[in-house]
Length: 205
Image (cartoon, rainbow, N blue to C red; front, side):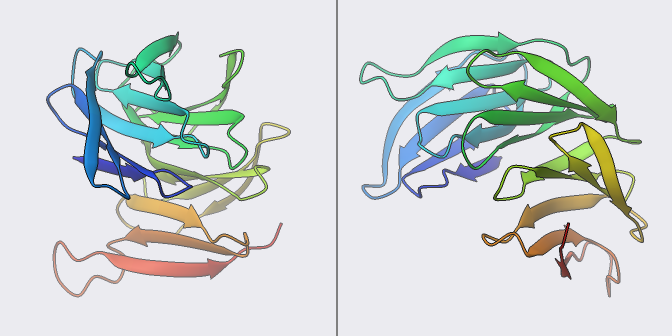
């Protein structure tokens, strides 16, 4: 199961392996609705900062944009084409204008949420586990199955830096709210099998 909290803290999206995604209202604890569109397991989801849009990605290679603001219930407003493998990671920029999606082949795509126009930045060897934008939206971090963290210059579609040193995949990554720290998780330096450690690195462009 994937759990995603909206940046404003008002909504939680929960996706599962049964092709269903549910949205919950955090203050009341009530489930607002459940939706189904994917034809296979939903592996990634993200909510826009204003809670108006949701983007989901699945094992069916599909990326859908949902309007979750309508009183009558959520509905799909676009399908974002281009991926040719299972979608593992999705992230919104802080201003909600851009969505990043990454798949198991390592393809990383950026989308304009208004026009739904997309482009491929690059391919990360071994596939992508997680994506995170910096607060200013200029930088994107991608945590790889190959044990690397790639830092991307979003404005120029350029690979800025590669962080290495993990023998297995990096499971998660996130920037601090002020953009000065990059946090990531992997089993590097694990004391026993299955242990996950959290790392914090200073970040400066």
